[in-house]
Amino acid sequence: MSIKTHTFKNGFKYIHQSGGHSLPISTIFLFIRFGSIHEKESNQKGIAHFIEHMCFKGTREHPTSISIITTYDEIGAFINAETSKQFTCYKIKCMNQWIEPCISVLSDILFHSIFRKNEMKLEQHVVKEENIRNNDNPTSHIDDMIYKSLYDETPYSYPVDSIEYPPQQSKDVLEIYRRFYQQQHMGISVVSNMSFDHIGNILAKTSFVSKNRQIHLSDSIDPPPKIYDSPQYSILKKKGIQATHIGIAFKTCPHSHTDKYPLLLLKNILGGYMTSRLFMILREKNGLTYTSSCQSIHHSSSGHFEIYTLCDPTKVLKNGNKPGVLPILSTILQDLISKGITQKELDVAKGNFQGNHILHLEEGDHKCEYNGIEYILYDNREMVPYERLYDVCLKSVTKEQVNEVARKYFQPVFMTVCLVGENVPDRRNLRFPLMGLGPHH
Image (cartoon, rainbow, N blue to C red; front, top):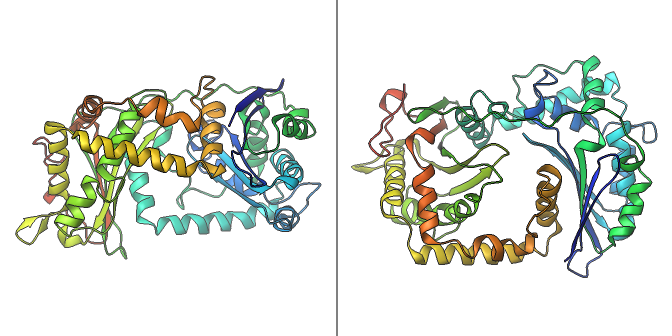
């Protein structure tokens, strides 16, 4: 499973890893370092996401969206795209024999999209429909509220897109597309049994390599998140959402920090599987929730650890004469900070990570995304190969290290508590006494 990399003269990056299996399948992730956090330069929120949509609407060679998609549909290939805070990613999965036309069309749409005014007007409605769908999703609101609270006064505090954002001005969109969609801000991650040189020769025939816009942009420098002197509380009363959705998050460390590995194991211990603390205490012991989970997320300048669950609104604070979900979550966190984890919990967390990691090796998506983020987004020339991540970065993590990061980051000054639902508790009645602290007003 060797990894090879190359940076072309125009700045375009290429990383290749062999598939590691006999299936004739190639996975391709094209990363562009242009996401919602860069929109301060364009002064149009939601424009990165809108441009992603418009790149499927037609070029001179493929004048309609149908002609673009037909290229992939007629060979049974998968293509999709997503816009995040830090980057836009175009994803392709195809049979090896079709990798050249798949890459060729991808190059065409990324550099030669036409952006017709009538298509832009129509696609604005499509994007709005997508945002309406997200607006009906309470987990989307929890995510936005956490970012707004923890990353206030930074570009990360704004959603990738929103129904509140105005329609994009057609006169500006093409200019911004040309400004940001350039080779030195792009890279392609490929997982395939086709050779590194063969795919490199295919790339050399495309605009990824042969064309250069000759526009230089400096990389975005993210300001550090604002630090508060007490926990933050965010409550959204939204009609039609029967359950109360709860998100508790703490500021942690950036992507480059080694604390992310103990935090990854802590994520498993708290909410990663059916014997995790959240599942066993909230669901099995108290019957309060059906689902609960944790995430450990890291960006270039900061990160956060998120706990998520949902429950009957009558059980948020109390469960009859017993404590409800929030008091129990408070107890779980206080016990974690004061008593730490057990060696058995750490062993299970490591075994779970290792097993899941091995299962992921049969899929190109995980390796492709990991390689692209490390090499293209973060320019990590000493990246640990995906298949060695456990052995190199997690196997040696100790119980003491996990306990140390829990005490380090799970503090009231780094915390936000977010609730979404039709019948959420009133802010004046909300109490989450982590380490004796109530809500901040």
